[in-house]
Image 1: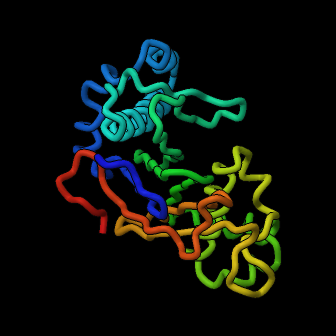
Image 2: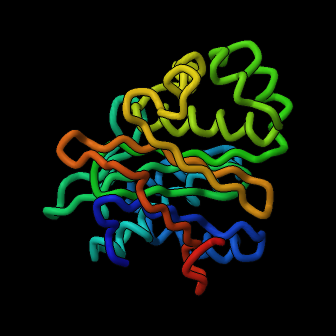
Length: 232
């Protein structure tokens, strides 16, 4: 896999189908280093263990192929806020963000900058709308006309929270847009996709001043382990 270029974001997903997802997890323990195997063994909930393994496999398999490093040797570190990052091993270290929902994992990868991603099922729309009515800034709430739009705004806020390394509750009251215009606050750019199986995938990205983008980055969506190059 070629690492993303400047102005490009790669989004990788684990298979959504039950059978394909089960096959994706097969022998996954072999891709983990010893400390992550111990953490996996410590989960009491089978669902929580499966979600942890799913995310770690996606990160280790995709980034391992990008950097030509065996997945179990990929030097993933966790910062004080619980955000994973990649210790420097080459001159071209990508940044990445990871999300889970409904038995699927999502990984966004970029060359540099600040990056976060989130995935949310549309069946959460009613709950999201209730929270939005209470906590979203008026300018954000006025832009919501459908349940899908409410979930998309929530996913954007969650993605920005992950990029910044703090809680979604810190983001709920922060506006996405500058007033009534279309420009996003503080140079953030957001990209969303509605999947056929009822999930919204959101990416939040902010370029560093040295490589500031005039246009939104190009985003490609791929399913790891699939022969299909793109999701759509």
